Length: 400
Image (cartoon, rainbow, N blue to C red):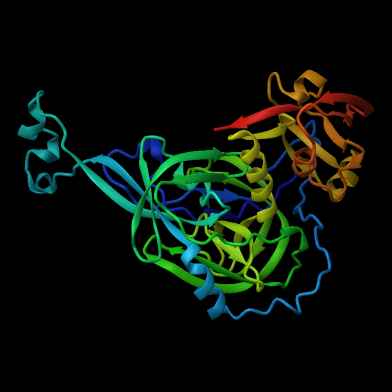
């Protein structure tokens, strides 16, 4: 079995203590993220540590991009907003703490079957967003606004509140677009995350700890092409994010959805996570992912993306050598009715090539995202010591 470092990191949204258990109050909490877990190849794999790093570095001139942190904060803070949640919760009766009957669950109040619970509306800052485009949409993380039963507000730098009228969620990329009535500020400029280099200076703006709005921190790009898996904080992983930016800029709970900005004053990432067990490790979604989602959304009014339909773990070169299997994406699960299912991919296959690209230092999810709905692609797989080639028809995955 390949054992990959399972160091946890925490998504930086301040959510109610998970929507499914939020009944008596809103607590400062968050989802957890860890490196991709272990996989099995017919029970023959040996222990080994590996880490996915995708080479996306390109050379470009930063000599004209040297804005000071103070200038960036002054010029862009008006375009950064706080996301706040409003929700009805059962009112806690503090007097019951001192009720001697309550210890045995025999409080007179509880003995009255007609007694209805009292509710109170609680509002809590839980994340950050920023304004883009002529339509003045607010971009944030999907996990920040995941509670479909709650209402949300945005709060600008002048502490003025605006109701969020509609939310479009893209869970595949942990992104959300918010429509806000009566809200109009300057949009922020989006950069090109494909031009990032390790060591580039960056600035983060957000609502640190769900309390300190428009907090500004600085750092550098520490790594590119990271792969992280988001979970529920109780050890159950729920989603994967690929090709993520790593930074040492201080990102705290409440920063989720906020911008990561280069020295040109352009957003190059959406802050999404911080390390749980280490300092100076934060993560951001590349802004080019956001731009692709926005382009698609502007055309259709909803999020649509190409879907392969597999859950997988990457086989490193070291693992391939030790176990005499090829480098590629080991298929853990195939979604019924998906492109992969209809095309003949099975659990246990290793995808070695996708659309003519070998999966050596390549990210499968990134390659799939570059295809269009309806495309026919050639996929090479390794199955039980045999190489096969399949043709797949790429289908659509729609988010709401």
